[in-house]
Picture 1 (cartoon, rainbow, N blue to C red):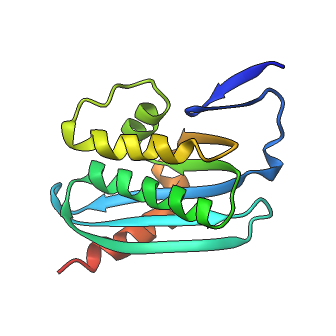
Picture 2 (tube, helix red, strand yellow):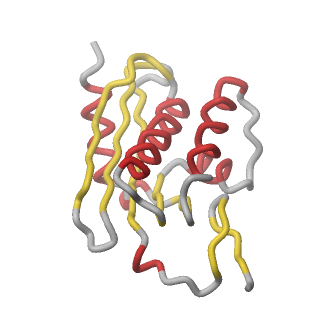
Length: 151
């Protein structure tokens, strides 16, 4: 059977995405580094909202916040029983690193990248896709709530 590469894991060619859950992730940092938060919005294949997270991270960079949101989304999706997942992020850097287009050069991101790869291995199929910021409004709003909550 033919396989195609999709965001770091394989799936069958022609496999319908109708059974895929969707997750939108975002990290926000004011000042970079600065007060930071994560936003995660997860829906099942029918569009039912299963989980929303908007939490503070403390003071960190935007890239750490983005990866923290991705890790949280993958952990939550697995805990909810998800097997097939589409993840949307407005972080081009993170999406391309996860998809193997960019190397992870920042030493402090390597453990987070490794954790993402570890989590991705637990899904039957997963795709990480970069989207424009305006298509990531739900997660963006949640990440801003988290960043605003940092004292």
